[in-house]
Image (cartoon, helix red, strand yellow):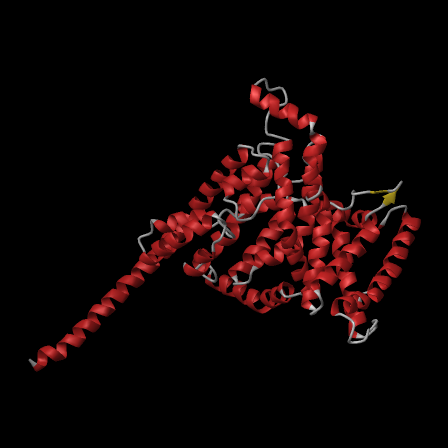
Length: 447
């Protein structure tokens, strides 16, 4: 077992860690992550509006308050949906600007300018204009991959033109704001002159505008992202990287965020249409079922450590319990420690996988509702699970079951580690007493 562990650590250190480090620092991955973070507040608030529009109340209820709520929601549906449509319904606009601004900042370009260029390039190909009205079909989750590609393209065009001094330069006496506006003229023209004809060409050849064609090409990949195999692969990658001390969450979520947002948008559209919710693997599923207390599902572990016989583990448990309730578990990961600790390798890697398999099947069998809301990842698991599923009760029960299973699986490893620490403490105490005695002996001899 020891040789197998050492071989695995060697592979992680020599092969996986360098590759993960490169991915984690890749400028496009960082820009996409920052773009989603920038858009997150708008999407969370927009998602929360669905709670009021589609309350978790039976449609045939006769209870006065509930009946009045449902009737009010039905009568004023369009007015109530406006905040949702202007936030979640336009998520790609926020993401496009965020990605462009972040990537521009990486290149030492003006973030506002690159954000606006990214927004324009995306609108140019995704905001289909018919009968004087702009279609919002691809301004939500369906256009998310197009938004990412357009933002990167627009920023790279601007960077290349500025790097090669292809710009309009005005005299120094011209105010800087006016000079900057003229400097951006050529990038705007270059982006329009390339993206718009390309969009028309694609539409002429396929009958689809660019975001529709991109979604058609990526449809198998999007479908594969909502599968048990994808869940297990993502969890394993995240856990192995974290065990090696690499921020696996940042890498995995950076890759999965576009798929999660596309699937969440489809779930919300189905909820609004009164249809069955199609997708299981979205961010709320990841945050509130698989990683209760943070990566490794360590909130139950913190509870076990509080009652440990080892003083060190008790201290770490007390330090980690409150942050763990909000899915922040660095005190546990680095304090116990969990990272690179062979005793905790098996439970840390496989407990989230077991939670994932269990959660997948109970959701697939219809015993637990699917996620339809976007929640902050710091929301405590039982509350976040209920909130994400439109305040259903079954996900709360599911969270406590996952926590109980995690505690049972962590328990023998905690006891084994505890024995090691207690023995070490006893040896240290014995060594300390022997040293004190040795210090006293010369004094006694002189007396």
